[in-house]
Image: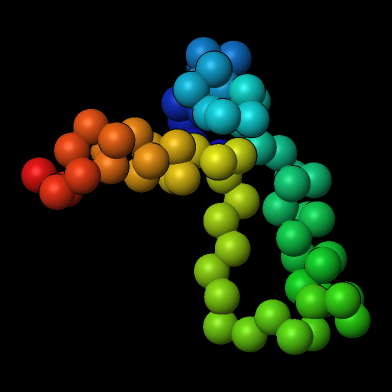
Length: 69
């Protein structure tokens, strides 16, 4: 966890679509899934465990200017 998230958790969490900052259990859930039989067909993927923040910012950028400029 970075310093801003640690020191300003509630404020930072308001900017995350899930409404909170992540915790250890969020990461553990993905790790357990990938280590379990149910995740054995997942290969070469990047799984973002970020509460939706990257998707939200990418979506906002495209809505403002579809050309990406």
